[in-house]
Length: 407
Figure (cartoon, rainbow, N blue to C red):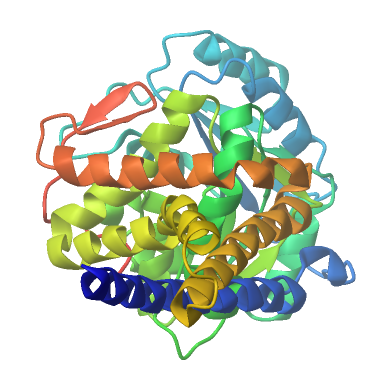
C-alpha cells in the first residue's frame, strides 16, 4: 500500500510540476505582452491631408440601457467625415425607438430596421451586413452598442491606419466588469484568450492568428468585400474573431493595439450572460474539432482547478506524513507556488487590463470552477438543439461553422 501511495504521489508531483511550468510561461508572457503590445495613445495624433469617409456600423439588440451613451460618444468624435449606420436587430425593448429618435435629430445618423434574420445567419452578422449595404464610406468602423468612445478615438485609429498603410485596425477595449461574477472570472479567462490572441501574435506576420475585437475595428471597404463581408461568417457566433482570421489569411495588413484609455465595453452583464458567453466560445470549437477541444478542456481543468483540488491533500500529507519525505515536500511546495502564480496572474490582469481591485484575484478557486464547469457543460450540450443562448436567441451549432484554429 505504501508503494502505491508513493507512486501516486510521484505521478501527482510530476503533474503539478508541469502545471507550475505552464503558469510560469503564462505569467511571463502576460507581462511581456502588456509591456510590448502597441498602445493607441502612444502615437501622436497624425495630420491627415484627406479624411476618408467612415461609415460607423452600429448593430443593437435590446440595448436601451447603453445605446444612447454609445451614440453620444460617437457623435462627439473630432474626426470630421463620418456617418453612423444604426441597425435595430429585432429588439423587443425601446432600442428601436431610441435609434429612430436619433436619426430624426441628426443628419449623420441612418436608422436601419433589417427585420428578422434569415435562417443560417447569426443575428449580429445579419445586422452588420445590412449596415454595410447602407454604408457609403471608404472605411467601415464596426462597434458595439455597449461601448463608449473618447472623442479622439476615431481620428487616432484612422490616422494610425493611414500612416502605417494598414487594411484594418482593431482596438483592445477596457472591459467593464459591472457585477461580481465577471470581476472574479474574467481575469482568469483572459489569461487564455490573451496568450492566444494577444497583439504580439496578431501583429506578427509569421503567425496565422488574426482577430478583431467586435467593440472596435476599422477595415477598408476593399478588404472587407474581398474577404466576403459578414456573409462569409454568417454562421459564426464569434463573428468578429472569425472575420479577423479571414483578413489575416487573405494577407491583408491587420494591426491590433491596446486602447483601454480610449474605449470601454461590457463583456458580460450577469452570471447568465457570463456562463453563456463562455459556452459560446467552446461549443462551436467542439463541434468542429472534437478531439482537440476535448483535450484542451481537460488541460484547462488541470491548469485551473487541479492545484486547488490537490492543495488539501498535499497539505495533509505534508503535516501528518513524514516531513523528511522529499516527494511530500516537493508536492506541497510546488502546489503552493502554483496557486500563488495563478493568483498573481489574475492580479496582473486586474491591474493592467481591467483596472479593478486586485482583491478579486483571491476568488481564483471559484473562478476556476465556473470556467472549468462551463467548458465541460459545453461538451455535454454541444449536439443539443439550441445549445447556445446569446442575446435572447438560441443557436444550434453544426460542424461546418469555422471558428478560431486550435493549432
